[in-house]
Image (cartoon, rainbow, N blue to C red; front, side, top):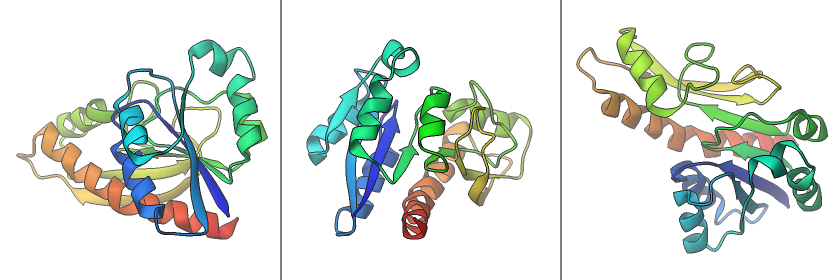
Length: 189
């Protein structure tokens, strides 16, 4: 049995998509969802889907080993950042080498780094008149959005596309590819 732990800060549409994708797969279990926001909509999704969730604060994440100890007790095969905005501390990266992955709503190395998430990225794509954008699934290292790339998928950006339309195209790619890439990685473990 392969175990996934998901980290999320927001609404959790990718989290729900991943949970639904693996629902009928007997060799994979979602061991839990961890969030740094007590009022994140992802927690409502977890309650509805009957998935364990845990909230933590900045002190527990960066200044103690609380979150690390939770993860060590669960022993996940893969830790998946699905809309999680905090930088991962080195003690987690060292304890779970090549087991932490992230999805970024752009074709890295473009539009990566601190503060580049969600509509900030899509606005940058529009402002720079890019003809394409997409998603990047990558391993997590000590720097924002600089880990080794696992998979990229592209979509066309039309000159008249709004930020909302660009976001919709990117979300469609996230929902299509993220669970499949996770499944491929689990098969390699």
